[in-house]
Length: 110
Image (cartoon, rainbow, N blue to C red):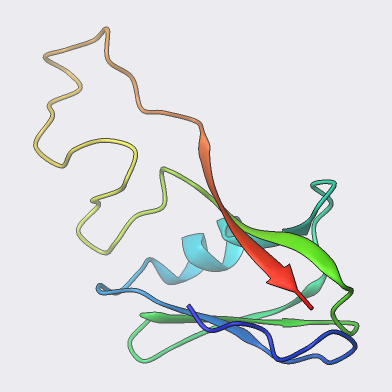
């Protein structure tokens, strides 16, 4: 993951994934929040066969802790996600259900 350039700039944040992501899903569910959990407004783009996710804030970055947030249900094109192993049959094990939690990666803006 690249780091935003500096406070008071609109430098982009880019995350590079090893596999292509679902375009519509990734644009909708991966987001950046501030320290309080409020979503940071900005433009999201996916390039390089949907492996490079880039966020450019609408307004300049503000000093402090931010987070890259995604639900564990984010999928690659084969339907694999970090919320469940790809080889689990949810129909055979009805007590196990997909997770609705999120992953938060801290980003310090200085």
